[in-house]
Image (cartoon, rainbow, N blue to C red; front, side, top):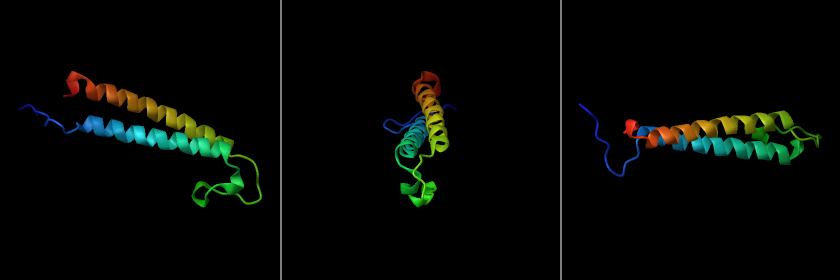
Length: 87
């Protein structure tokens, strides 16, 4: 028996693609925050370091690179979700 998708309801592949997109955007925002905000001004959950005015460049680069990788995965997931084979 073949599953017939319900009209107006997103497929599981589309839901995964949206979740990946949200994750990618969050990682890119975190990377930009790490690049622009000095280490002593960061929120405590991001690893504030007292009396240091430098930026956390390694964390920023890691967040941006991971954000780009997840963004590419999101694009691939969107393409696969829209293909006729996924339906």
